[in-house]
Image (cartoon, rainbow, N blue to C red; front, side, top):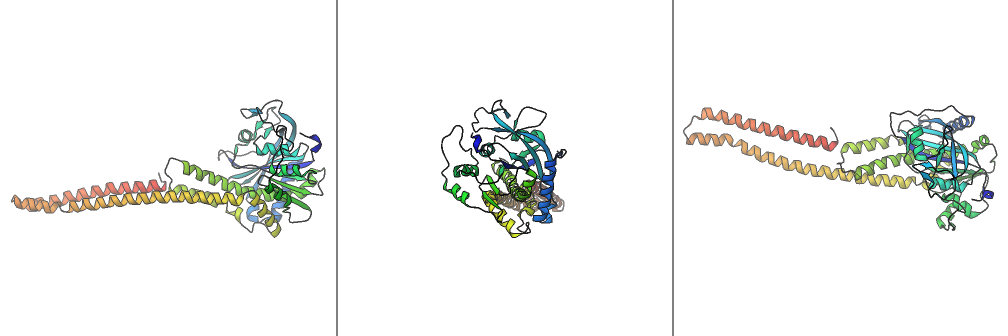
Length: 416
């Protein structure tokens, strides 16, 4: 790690999450000055940029201040059972955690705020890319891996990969370092000796997606680099320039979270040994339907923020995730249709058997009449017995068949 290459920066790590247990409520901690300003500015920005439909459905909570362990990029034996081993942390940053909830869908975006970061940026990004984020609260000395930490402290689980926003006063002096930032890889790694040569990454590094002239923005699938000249040593002052891009990324990650959650359920259904029912399909449609406000093309009041949002969403693979969702859902629906077709074929065969049985039953009285004639018996007595017998048999068969058909229909629809 090259200490001379460290540049003062503000870093935001955004993680899409859901509650592990829907009955658990998340407790908000007492605000710090920083968290209070951050949430106020974010709420003001959302009202300024966005329609009331989205603003009124988002709530934000401050979860507290925590320690963030900054490591090198050699992760061999770095942890045991999710706990960071001693001696692997190079330095520590104080971070603040803010949770944004969309209550209608039960989706969350956890934001880890690293204000005025002093650690080398690409090494933090490498930790994010490789799931080596370690956090600790003030009451303990151990640092837990992010998934363990979120479950223990908040009762939430991650449902998609985190994204990173890096805010800077200027581009790195070396082009290779800038490429490493966009790739989310450690620059001048401790244990590998090669440089990035990707033409695609070079194109990204040359593609400034900014919509106004006071900043530059470059975005890859994992990271957004946001550069503005007014970057200062005061984090509160920097927020005025940073808050808009944070809010836009937050909305995009809500879209990704919505797709990922439902897509995971679809994949579970596809790989399950149980039969898929129409009720399962209906639940998936209902679940995804609750996220409809995220997809409203008129969410932003101005054209340029929407253009910026579209560019970031494309880089964050939102259209590709949506395409994967529709493809998997179509496959799931095809399987249900196939099962329904097979069930209908079986029911048709059962109905044919019923028709044959009923036809046979209907001639029982005629047979009885014939027998009574041949035996010279009194048909006035035997005939009613035959009628009653055939009617009872017919009724019993119809009741049994009707119950079986109804049970099959209920099972196919997923009704217990």
